[in-house]
Length: 97
Image 1 (cartoon, helix red, strand yellow):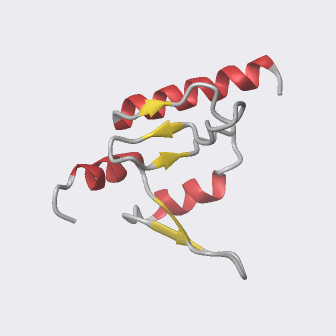
Image 2 (cartoon, rainbow, N blue to C red):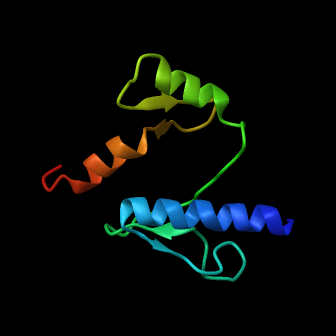
């Protein structure tokens, strides 16, 4: 991985950690025991990915009708859900789920 990609990844991890009041995991993905990029205040671990335009279809789906959650499943794979970070933060801040 080039230095530009590493810096871009670091910036994405730091930005997401700040937005969610989480903690960026130093050496994530490099050293054993540091598997994920950010640990949220509720203890969940987050893998942060940034791509220049690789998520275009996902953004199109989320922006078309502004759903609260986008649920996707490939054949023979488990469901995954995606949402805008504002909705995610709102969900995290709820006391009684």
